[in-house]
Image 1 (cartoon, protein in one colour):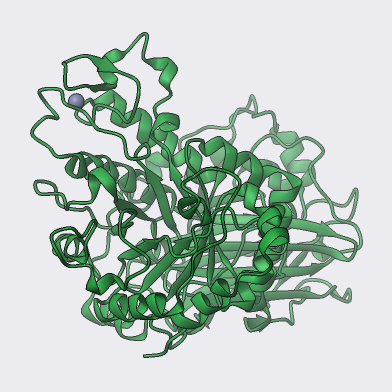
Image 2 (cartoon, helix red, strand yellow):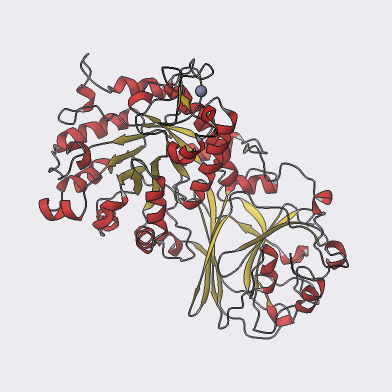
Length: 593
Ligand SMILES: [Zn+2]
């Protein structure tokens, strides 16, 4: 921390103005003492468990109204159609200055998991810290601010300040002006973008986090006590000048101060966007990045009435992550956002989550084969604590690089490969071992994203349900019957010769929740029908099979359906034209209740 007290005072930023004695020593070193005063444990919930027990009505809201999850991509741009429908608050004023205020608009949306909010800010000269050295650098920057009060007197309140690039300074407060910078808002996501007319900031907070902060269950429509502010600096005019501070309401103070009860106002959370009346809430395709050589895939998916594109790769998580981070990947995300499509990532991930080069030094972290030898060929030893630790940590790292818009994560075992046969693991089936690991990973993911859900892939060697391990909250079933037939309706594949029969789905639904379960199908998987050999063959297609299968899944209570559509790429479209199957797939799944 290189911000000295003198810098703080000369810039006189509003937040720190009266806290110098409290936070700074004579040498200008930030004293990290706040936790002594703010030892209210459980605010950020390190276990991932809600501090507030859900009440029956909140649970009922979730189930009976099934609010949507909004397909918003956190990129600082308000291009998603949902933002046009957001509740808008304008009318920000200069409470302490006669200057004409530049336009500031706050927008808010709520879905089943999160409060989404945005600021659209007009600003002729965006002021940014010349050297950004951590969250306190925001004190030197133009920024937008939202404060949430637990009580009217501000005995506890929580402040989130976001700069034009989406960088966050979050801290907890107690009246009067006692700040805890160590506090971080669990699951907060934010992004910002500077434009020619100013900047836009986009952010979201899990309702679970708001519930913990405010000490009561926060559902869509709940009434909150909120402050909405903006620091509007001019170049060379940082600090406490009266015309540097804007607010949605006029605080009752003579000089600028947002840390007073009168800076807050009652504000009702918007109602959740209801999900469509369609039976299938997720109607997706799973592609590999190479398939996006057909650059119009998002349009094709939207035209077919699909909700979701998931990106996949059979062996490399890096393949997908580096694509998403490339200009083409960013363009793909923007296009999906514009069209209101969710984006997810379905990855065989274990060889990347426990890097194979660790084997030389730590063979005991890796699986034991049937012959009693440790081998780095697949998966890991799930009763090895350090191995679990590394996988969980790397899963969170990967989740940060590839955040799904649905909070549904897919970090699968290595493709169809066996798990561990060591004395500790041997008693657990491959399905049990996968679930042991998933239970651990979902706990870590929920520290990052309290609404996180993680797939348990029932497929090939994990098709049978786990027998000894129960799913932790947030683990959902993903059922992928790769060996079934596609020339006969699935429901009719019941004889002794049937492979991956529906009875396996039934058996899994006795272990996993039905409402979140997902079918991962192969109806459109050109790579499968080509036996994974190029050149691709034309998709064999019988719409009647698909329609019958959709009916079957609907009757079983499945609400999330995706299909591989791998190898429907530019080359395929050129050779075979536009497959009617995609439109028919969308139509068959778009059935109403
Ligand atoms: Zn083992």
